[in-house]
Length: 335
Image (cartoon, rainbow, N blue to C red; front, side, top):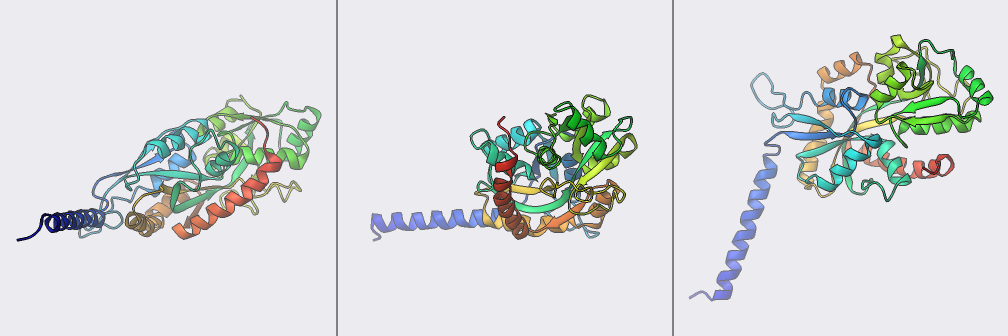
């Protein structure tokens, strides 16, 4: 006759094996329902515009009806804008479940710079998030309204020197790429502009178009789509961009503004997401970003693509963390 202790042990073992089998089966079927992707910026802006393009093939099936990327499950974009991304990312790390069904779009340098400058205000950092893949790299550009008296960066700099803090410059938020580019311009050109965080790239662009600010730093992709209504004076990158080949870099103009503000965009998960789920995403998502229909749509919308794998993004995040911590020592202002 089996003792009570042996019977209890066998029951526990059977329960553990059963749970492991169920978990393994669930992961093997992942995903078996739609996946949400939080975008911490408003609808119509560059991040939202691109996120909808790069995820549009997630539910794709081949001619035989077999899923190509993520078991035929769609990715659904959920916008949670506010405070330059802080509202959406804070809510994501505090409320989302680490199960692979709640992902988020990341923006670098945005979330990394904010975690450095506002460590008590924001809940996110590179240690509690897991990169999946990067889809693009969007440089910041300096823009003015088509009717602006400024026809060059030098015109703006000359005016700013004669009128300290009179030049208003819009951007998506505090310590996003736009803000970093403006801080770099002020330092390199020896001027003082007044930075106006507007709560997203769309609003920042509208501020320039509507005359609420004299200039703005914005995403190249957004500026490209509105180029008929703007003057695009310079690009904050190390080389000219194929979409705007006639626009010089700040470096070309003798102004020491580099590529620190280039906006890397991709998809991430919460730390604690099961490793097998992470591996499914890390395998399928970069391939989805490279889908020919996605590439064509990105090109059509003036959106620079730069697909990077999970390992490449992990390396980029660590490098940007160290670099921005050093850069912001000299650039940051008490807010």
